[in-house]
Length: 115
Image 1 (cartoon, rainbow, N blue to C red):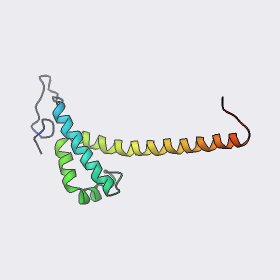
Image 2: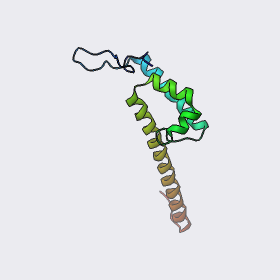
Image 3: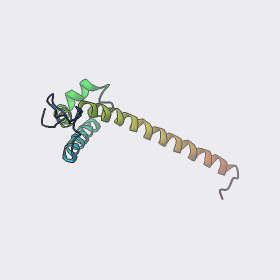
C-alpha cells in the first residue's frame, strides 16, 4: 500500500515539514483506481461507498483495494462523498427540468406564447 509518496506512513516531507503533493502520474493512478471502483459500484447498484462500505468491500474487493492503495485516505473519502453529492445534484436538476417543462406546457395550454 505504500507505493505512492503520500499513501504510506513514511511519506516524504517537504523542507517546511508538510507533505509533498502527488505528481501527475500519481494523481492519474488515483483517478483510474477511483473510476474502476465506481464502475464496480455501478454494476452492483451501490451509490454510497461510505454508507454501504461492507457491501462495497464484499462485491468490489479488488477495486476497493486498488483505489485505496492508489489514493490517500482523504482523497478516497472525498471521492466517495462527491459521488453521492453529484448523484443528488443531478437528480435535483432533472426534477427541476421536469417541473419547469410541466409549467411551460401548462402555460402554453392556457394560451401563453414564448417570445
